[in-house]
Length: 374
Image 1 (cartoon, helix red, strand yellow):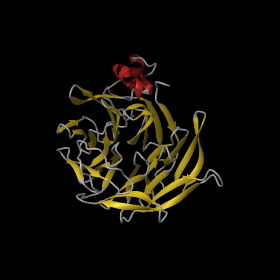
Image 2 (cartoon, helix red, strand yellow):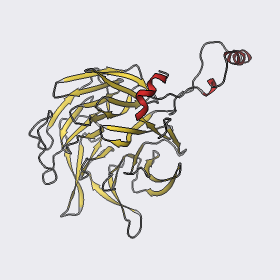
Image 3 (cartoon, helix red, strand yellow):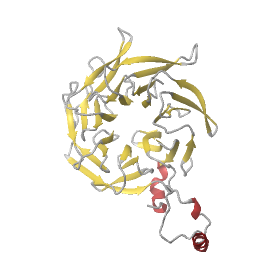
């Protein structure tokens, strides 16, 4: 396993979302269009294998169920499709339209841990929790509406397959019950509540200063929730203790966040680099930027060479450098676990507006922090 980030540059435009299959041999990517391209691993490269082109407008989110090998996509066209691979006859992905019943763009989608339902966020101020009706042979959606007052931007499922966290543009992060009768078993009592009928609000949180909630994530054991706001804050909520910690980072806003384990969180966004937050004692705190990229011009260049070059160009010693000294050259909009188990993520992937997909080695984070340039 390489210590250095593995960078893949597709050169096909900005990446709006991505997802891997179970063994990481295939990758679904949307390059900010209405088409999803599935790549297959071929040595060190990714080779196009299939194209999913059922949507009419840009695809906003993709999720790939690892066990059932089904893909779900949602789009600005207000639709979602569940894609199933026909291994026996055509060897093609077959789409099934999902009845979302929304009148605004779908923004985000995620399978539940048991893969028997999925949730779709939207600009319709609601969340569609979708499940398969055997009698009618189709996917239907049930709406979570109140008290959502604006676009839902992100979602994450609790490990119990019932609770659902949502980050919204009304500056709130909420935890709902997405219990579906006939699909779900009664969940065990937890800090989030005991009786959990559908649309029960189990928690509503703000980061204090305000700002859109761009991303939400449950901790591996489900006892805590982290969310990031447009005011450059990262907030961790623990309902069992009532503790709410909001960390204001001296960086641009984070658009995506995941737990590596119970003691480490990685967030990334407009600063073009993943940042590590760690639990130290009872307090969460910013630890380090995980991107150790350095200026190419600095490698093998002496101070004398630098001043000579500046003198020939009539430059002052004031820095005029506009290069982004990170592996990503633009905003990171998605972080996904790549290898390891929930609660023990060994590698994670990031994709961004620069059209790059990068796989980072989380195992060597602690060892590498001493050498990072903050």
